[in-house]
Length: 209
Length: 318
Image (tube, rainbow over all chains, first blue to last red; front, side):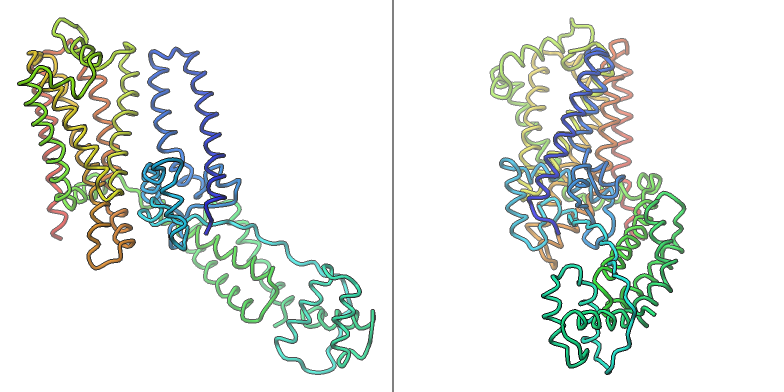
C-alpha cells in the first residue's frame, strides 16, 4: 500500500504530462483553425484528458499512468488482480469528490483515516494503490571450497551460517572475525582461519560441491 | 534439498516464466499460465519453509505476483462484451436502479416545472436564474427570425458543436454522478439546479412564443440527453444511499457493492450522451428540416429510449 506522498508526486507528474499534451494540442488547433473541425477535435481531446487520462492508462498500461510508473506504484483491485475498466472508471470519476474542497483535501483525509490508504474513489471502486518493487538481484557468493560441518547443526543454526556467508561482503573483516569467534567451539580456529572455515561450512549447507 | 540444487533444478522453468512475464503480448494461454502459477506457488512455499535466502524468496514472490496478474488480466479482458451489455446488462442495471431513477426524475423535473411555470407567468423570473446578457443572447438564438438554430454558435461547423456538447454534457453527468458520494447531496443539487435552469429557459421562451424554434430543436436529442442525466443522478444517488443505508453490510462493503453495480449505468450514460451530442450537433440544429419532421423523429427517439429503458425487467426474473 502506498501513502499520499508518492501518490501526490505521481499525480503532479501526470499533471505536467497532461499540460504538455494540451499545450501541443492547442498549438495544433491554432494551426488547424480553432473554429471548425480543429476546435471540435480539441474539445473532445480536452474532455478525454480531463476525465479519462488515468482510466486509459490504468486499463491499457497495466495499472500505471506515466507518473505512477515513474514512482513505481500500480493501481490494482483489492484482491490484487489487475484493475478493470469499470473500477478504474469509478475511482477516477469520483476523483472530483476527493478533490473537494481544495487540492484533494477530502481524499487526503480519507486516505489517512484507513489502514489501506484508500481515498473515497478507491473505496467505492474497491481498488488499492500498491508499490511494485523490482526483484532483488541474486546474491553473489565468493568461490570457496565447501567443507562438511564437524557436528550436526539444527536448521536455524544452518541458516545463520549461510547468512553469515551471504552477508560477508557487507561486514568488515574484524567484525567477521568477532562473529566467527563465537563459534570457535565448532571451527577450532581463530581469526581469519575461523572466518574462512565458517564460509566453507556455509557453502556446504548452500549445496555447493 | 540444498538451495543450490533447488535453484539448478528449477532455473529453466523460472527463466521461461520470466520471459512470459516480460512480453505479456505473446500468446500466454490461460492453461499454461495457471500451470506455471501453481508450480511457482509451490516453489515459493518450499523456499520459505526451508529458509532459503531472502533474495530468492523475494524473486519467487515477485514471479508469483506477476503470474497472478497475468492470469486475472486474461479474465478482465475477455469480460468486455458489447452485445451482452446492450441487450442485458444495461437494461437490467436500469431496472435495478428504478427507485433511484424515479427520485432523480422527480428532483430534476419537479423544480423544472415549477421554475418553468414561474418563468412563463412572470417576465422577471428568468433573471433570477440567468444574467441579462445570457438572456438576451438566448433570445437571439431562438428568435424565429434567426436562420440557424441552436446554442451559441461560436463557430459555424457542426463538428465544433459536437465536441462542445460531448465535453459539456458528459462532464455534467460525471459531476452529477460523483456528487452522490457526498451522501447524495451533490447529485440532488446538480439535478435540482439543472431542472430549474432548463425549466425557466423553456418557460421564458414559451412566454415569448418562440415555440416553433425552441421545441423542435430540443425534442430530438432531449430523449437521450435528459434520460442520461436522470440515469447519472440515479447512479450517484445509489452511492449516497449505500453509505446512508448499508443494510446488512458494513458501509465500506455497501459502497463497494454500489460502485460495482453502477458501472453498466456509467457505460450507458456515456454512450447515450455521445448519441445525444451527435443528434444535437448534426440533426437538431439543421434549419432545413420541416418542424413536423423534427417532431416526428423526436417522438420516435423518445419512444425508443423509453421502450429500451423499461425493457430490463425480463432479465431479472430468471
